[in-house]
Amino acid sequence: MNLPILQPEMIWMLIGERMAEGNHMYTDILDDTGPLAAGTYWLLHLVFGRSVLIYKVLAGLIVFLQMVYLNSLFMRYKSFDENTYIPALVVLILFYCSFDLVTLSPALMGSTFIVLALGQLFAQTVLQKEGSDSVLLVGLYSGIALCFHFPLVIFLPYLILAGVVVSSFSFRQLLLSLIGYFIPIGICALYYFWIDALPQFVVEYILVGRLGEVYVHVSYRDLLLLYITPLFFGIIGIFLSSLFKSLTVNQQKQLQLMLIFLFFAASSILLVNRRTPYQLLILIPSLAYFISMFLNAAKRGFVNKILSYVFVIGIPLMGFGWWSVKHSQNKLEDYAVIAKPEHDISKNKKVLVLGTDLGFYKDAYQVTPYLNYYISREVLADFEDFKDMSEAYKNFLEEKPELVVDQDGVFQNLLQRIPLLKEKYRKSGKFYFLEE
Image (cartoon, rainbow, N blue to C red; front, side, top):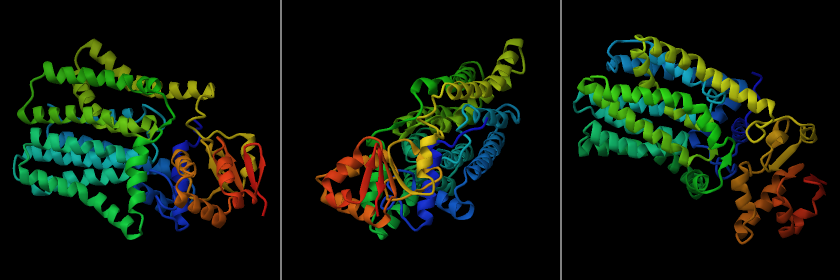
C-alpha cells in the first residue's frame, strides 16, 4: 500500500531520539505520550534508530499475541458451546479495519494489558473463589495500561463496576485490586518527583492532553465509516447471545463483562488527544467476542453464511478502500507526513516546527522541548509567566535551532517579547534562520 509515515509515528520516533540524547519526558520534551510508551520508544531508538519498520514489526507481533491470548481465553473458560479458532480469525480481521491499527501506538501497547486484565476477570468469575492473585493482577495490568495510554483510565470505573457487580468482589478484594491499579502510576510519579518534574508530569500527561486542543486527524464521520461494519456484526452478536441463545451461568457473566467492556471502550474516545482510528482498537476484544458468537451460529443457514463472507471480506476491503480514496484525493495531509519540495530546506539541520506539518523533521533533527505543537503553543504564548519565558530563552540559546518553521506566528510573537533572541534570527516567510 506504500503507506507514508503518520504524524503520531513521527512524534514517537522523535521522542525516542530526544530521550536517547539524555532528555526527560515532560521537562525536556513537551508531549503527552505515556511514560511507559515513551520509554519503549527510547529503547527502540537506542537499538534500531529512527525506524518506522520496527514499529510495524513489533505491532504485528503484539497483534498476534493478542489474537492467541483472546482465543485461548475463550476456549479455556468455555465462552462458546464448542472450542473454535473463530475468535482468532475475527481478531485478525478486526485489526484491518484501518491501516493504522497495526503500528506501535501507545493505544496498542496499553490495550494489551487491558486484555490481560480482562483474562483475570474471566478467571475470577469462573473460579468463584478467593483468588487474591488474579484480583491483584486485574488492578496491576490496568494500571500498567494507564501508564502507556491515558485514555485507558476509563477502565478504572470498569474495573470497579465489573468487579463488584459481575465478579462479586468483596471489599478486601476491591481494595487489593485498587492498590494494584495505583502501583504503576505511583512508581512513575515517584520517578518524576525524584527528578523534580512531578508538576510537569501531572499537567502534561494527565491534564493538558485532555483539556487542551485535540489533533483532529480523522473526522467522526470517517471513524464511523471504518467501524460501522464490525459494529453491525457486533450488534447482531449481542442480540443473538442475549435473546436467542441459552447460556450457562458462567457464560452469562462473561456476556455481562463484555457488554460493560464495550461501553467503556467506546467512551475512551472522549479522552483522546489525537482523533485517529487506532484510538478505538480497544473495542476489538469485546467486538471479537460478540462477532464470534454470531459466526459460530452462522454455520447453519444460507443468509448467515453470506453475512459471514461479508464480514471476512468486507472489513479489509473497507479499510483498504478508505485509504485509497483519501490517498487519491490528497486528504491525508492532516494525518500522514506527506513529502513536499519545501521540506528539503530542513535537511540535516537542527529544526523546530511550530505547526502541524511534521515533514520538516523527516531528514532533520528536532531540538528544544517544544515537540507537541498545541502544548508548546500554550507555553510559548504565556507571556505573563516569566519562568516559561526565561526557560524558552534558555532552551533556544542552548540548543540553537538552525531553522524554525513558524506556521501561526507563535515564534514571531515570542521574538517581540525576547529582543535578545530576535537578534539571532533572520525571517523569510514562515521560516526563521539562525544567523550565527
